Structure formats: structure tokens, C-alpha cells
Length: 433
Image 1 (spheres, rainbow, N blue to C red):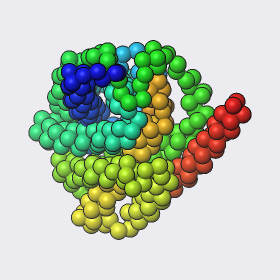
Image 2: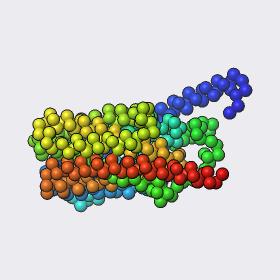
Image 3: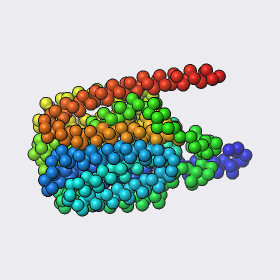
Image 4: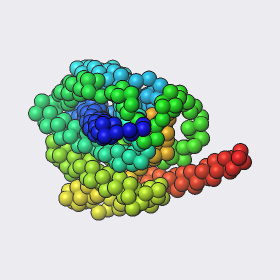
């Protein structure tokens, strides 16, 4: 844009201010919307003890419902991720939230295990419409340079959503029974869906055709080049493996944390929920801290940093059964592990997909990584439920410790693979000159 006079300069300044306002608006709405998805997701965790007792079902059967959710959520990510790069993410998120609302209302209204399994599995598929499409909108509204900070902010949404949902549903279950944990949060999620549809737009050009983020040009705005899934897998397969084991670690504690305090320390469900809330609250602090580190002092070194941190997590999980015999000690260790584990998984699920992808593939890459992340979560459902039924809680923590070491290895492998891919790209470019 050529600036010919003072009037042109004033218009350019006003456009930048308006674009900046909309960028913050998109960040805020994206954050709030994805946090609200958790109203219809982790409410299940808080309802487990009373659900198990009132319907007389086993931990393994509860685990199957959790695994059904995460498997459908995971495969839904592959579909939603690619759709988010090809159709309107705004419409995709709106429709998915409304359908998830319907499944929560249905789940809270029935008592047949088979029907509940179907409803919660379908809910997982509809819940998959959130992460990658919202990430796509955020990436489209921001330049590559801005995305590291945006990714750090956005990543705290699922931590905060987790904590607020546990707090709300813990109160609901204690006062009104487990069904209220699905009715009330489900309706709230539907209200947020309407707000998202009303106040969000897919791209800056939907507001003003002249608004261009830093690396966007008019020519590539018209481009419709999307990588195939095999191409994306070829570039990111070690990160996919790290996402599987990282997801198993995080969601094992999310799903089974409240039940651990009920079984081991004899707490009531509300008290167990209140203590478990410390886990994601600490995770918010850890996510912000780790996001600040990789956007600043450790910029460009986030993969190796994550690899080292997962070794630390493995050590803490291995020691947990030995040093957590007292309630206060268990809670303190939960806070520590939560602050680290939430933060380091942000590198896998948010920062790397946003930083290493271009605007035409962000949703596809994010969908693939979140697919893998929730394959791990599905293992945490029935897998951990089976371990607790047949062995012990100590065995569970030993398994999670091994998973942390494996995640560290996969991240180190991804660092080598990324460097190798970069070197090959340079050689190809030189050969074509």
C-alpha cells in the first residue's frame, strides 16, 4: 500500500488499530469457546464415583465409556482437522458444540449402559470439532511471529476449562446428583456456541478485504493448496508418537484423579473434586511459564526442552506411590506434576503445530496431533481402569512413569527428524538452482 499523504497515513494507522482489536477479540473468543468445550467432556470424570455406585457398574465398564469417547474424539480429529482447512471453521465449531450439547443432555437422562456408551462415544466425535478448527482461526488471524505467544495463551484454555468444569460439576453432583453434571454444563455449552457464531469471523478479510497479516499476500489468499495426510504424517510421525504417550499421561490423571482420592484417601466426591482442581489450576501456571520460555529464552529449542522435562515427570510419577501416603503430600505432588505435565504437553499439541505449519495446513496438522493425543487418552480410560481393578494404584503410577520416558525419547527423535528434513529441503533447493 503506497502512502501518498497524511490522510493515507491516518487510514493505515486506523486499520492497524482495528486489526489489533479484532486479533485480541479472536484470541479471547477462541480461548473462551474451547474452554467451554470442557463443560461437556470432563464432567464425566467428576460423575464417575456416584455413576459407578448408582448404576452398579464396574471401573472397567466406566473405562470403556471413557475409551469410547476418546477413540471417537481421536478419529474425529482427523476429520475435523482436514475440514477446518477446507470449510468454515466458524460453522464447524458452532455445529459441533450444539450436537455435543444434545449428547450431554441425552447421557444425563438415561440409565442403560449400552445407550450411555453410544451417547458418550458420539459426544466424543462432536467434541472433536473444537481444537483444530479454532487453532486454524487463530493462525489465520496472526502472523508466524505472533503465533508462539498466541499458542501459549490458547493452550491455557483447556487447563482452565478443566478446572472450572471440575469445580462446577463437583458442586452439582454433591447437591443435585450425577445427572445434573451433564444437564447444566451441556446447556451452558450451547449458549457459548451461539456466542461463537455471532461474534467470530474466519479470516480478517471477512471484516475488511484489505486486512492482511504479516506473511499473507493477495496471491496466496486465493491459494487452495492443502497437504495430503500421508505427507503430513511423513513430516510429523515422531511427534505423533510423542502425542500418544503424552496424552496417556495427562488424561490418566484427569480421568482417574478424583477417584484416586476417593479410593486411597477415603474422601467424599466433592472433596476429591476440589483437591483434583488443583491439578489443572497448577497446569495453567505451568502452561504460561513453559509458553513464555519457548517464546523467549528457549525459542527454537522447545523440542529438546520438552524431552528433558518428560524425564523429570517420569521420575516424579515413579516416586509418587512411595512419598504420597499422606493426603497433603498427595495434593502437593499433584500440583507439581500438574504444573509440569500440562505445560510440557502444550509444546506437543499447540506450539509445534502452529509454528511448524503454514496457514493452509494448520488445522490438518493440529488434528493429526490431537488425534494421536487422544488415542493416548483412550488408553488411559480402559487401560488404567483395568490396571486399577486387577493390580493397584501403585502399578498405575509405574506404568505412567514408563510412558513419560517414552515420550521423552519420541521428542528427541522428532528433533533429529526435523533437522534431517530441513537439511534435505535445503539440498533440494540448492539442487534446483
